[in-house]
Length: 135
Picture 1 (cartoon, one colour):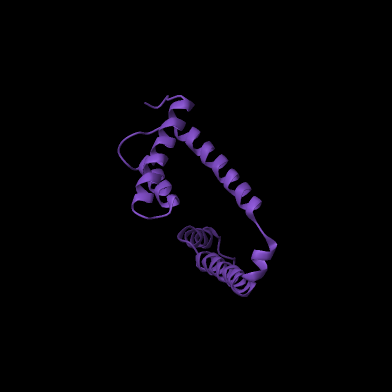
Picture 2 (cartoon, rainbow, N blue to C red):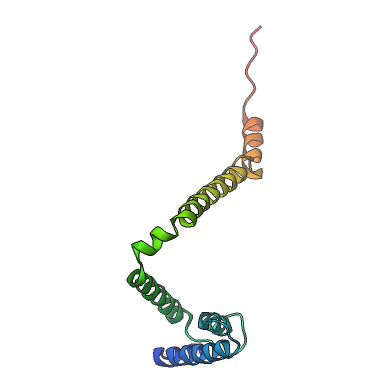
């Protein structure tokens, strides 16, 4: 089943999305919840249908591009201006927190010497010849 054609992979993915969307609407949830559950059901870690991983990855990238395009079409500066009181501080605090977390992770992992660097120092210390003492 690893050599499924592109058409079969897309058809099964759309069928899963349709079923997930209908079930989500019946449960009075947003359809995106159904699509997400359908995506998890199609994932490589669940039993059932498994399409060509590389094809699915490329289609997912295309889906993200189309999603960003759709968000860009619906973007309104006036809507952003109305939520600026929460959006600007939220964005700035998110950037600050992520930057500090990245800095902390980077420095905490590199500040300690590794076992290989310690052993190489010991090896160099043992291989040095002692200086001659002149009398």
